[in-house]
Image (tube, rainbow, N blue to C red):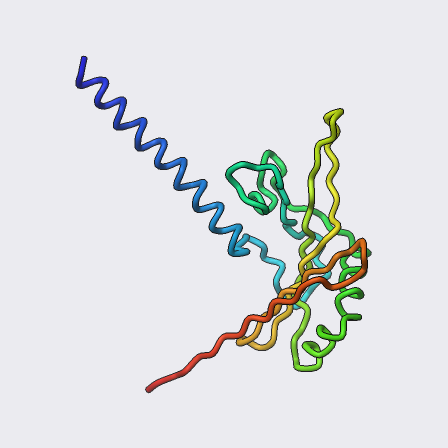
Length: 168
């Protein structure tokens, strides 16, 4: 009898640890912008992008949830060419982005940030009011540009550079 309870306890502990590890891994992946988005090529006309699910009420998943894979919302999100063009036009009109483009950066992707809200009546509303535009310069430079679509302005730019020192 005690042997069965001990085995059950061990199995339960392993199961709980596996679940917590999975949650921690998904949180880490989303916090670091690591998604399975394969649309980061020079072609920004592809119609399928994984949006970022902005779950502001999730107790375990932080601000960004599961990157579009939360609560049955999985699968690719089809983004209209008009939306992408609008976001790119707003991005290109910013003076700091114009400087980056003049330095050799290219736009490589547009990812909408989708906010989801549930009203008092239970109606769920999803809206992409913000987007992140990816820029890349050769293999050493990347930039992320946050665009507020409703206000038609760039709100944040992150420039990431990589320095490689080859030693023989």
